[in-house]
Image (cartoon, rainbow, N blue to C red):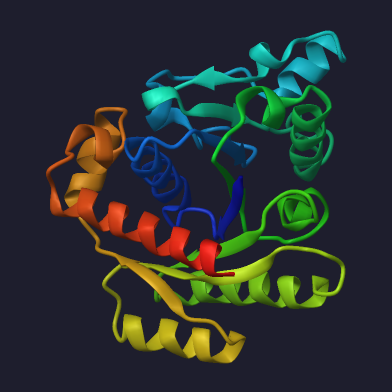
Length: 252
């Protein structure tokens, strides 16, 4: 089982990228589980084509521990197992606790044994890297962390903070940094800025994604690019990125 956490600033295209990676891996015949670790609970929408999903925090609030593993998941594109951690009631509680609850409940109810995924993808908000948001980095969860950024200053700042957090966690059995994914926004000197980030954090760009209207077109259809436009150049970019990420994980 290969376990991968994808972090990035909110709005950077993280969930879109993770869902397309999941679809690309599923197309290769791999068993995939995607766990959305964002309070918005929208990580997996493009995979199962439905407007909502019962989150783990919803189940905990409504049923305490009296719910089944099957109630926690929704099966999506080509059998992808979709899970959403969810968030607290607005104004009450901590968003990070949803991630902790989701991962604890998945393990407690034997999700990894029952579904036996080849690849687990954690889609994690990276604006803050503390408490529950660092949970997927911890031992027993992700093996590698990949950070998505554009050349925009706030995205680069968030990516740098994620890398610093990982560095501070080294020695505790946490995941290591696998590399940086450049999701282009076509800002000035974008590749140069992201390469400078990589130089600063001792990493490299493992893949680059173009800015494309096809991504928006697929989202409007409620699907991934891989499913909606499988013959497109953008679908090929996601497939290439999936291969590059897998190569990094296997060579670790």
